[in-house]
Image 1 (spheres, helix red, strand yellow):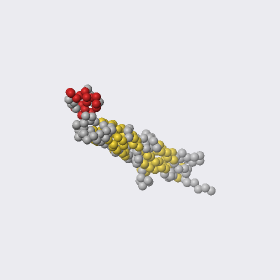
Image 2 (image 1 turned 135 degrees about the vertical axis):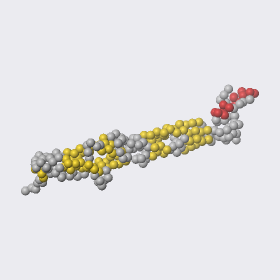
Image 3 (image 1 turned 180 degrees about the vertical axis):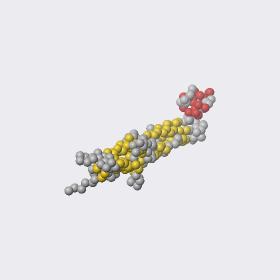
Image 4 (image 1 turned 120 degrees about the vertical axis):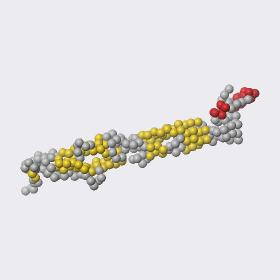
Length: 239
């Protein structure tokens, strides 16, 4: 003979229910790259207690879930959305119990969430012109992310180079493993002061007939009797 569990419901009708209920988790959100969501995630838990031929379903009594590895369990309600908002990885455990006391083995759903774009750390830089072609500089720029320990940082121009006199605009773009992107623009200004001597001819810009700063050209006064000679000899950028 085979032992069969028999229990009575409140109406007095005998119920044969040996089948465990089954629960399905359905997450909804904006899915990014590498199985990460880039938004909050709403999880719907759907329980079923369908009995096979020969049994009568007792129906689902409750569905429970845990967000702390099973330390505490909460009752799931279809009228109260289960929203996961924690950045990083969240482990959701869930199971259902039917009215005959059959308890489903807890299932696990792992959710990865990253809604925040990387932060770019870089500042505007200014430096004096040190050579005729400009100044060698290494611009510091880094990116940090709350989930991705090594976000990608791309610069529109090399950050280590000889920057020419004037203003250079640099566009920085940081992207994390989820696809979240942030941008930042910085400027590098290379200037030539009147006291500088970038061509190392022992003549400062203030007295050099061929200074590097256009502003000095604009303010430079050439005596009339020498203007034609100076223009032909040094190719000054004015008439």
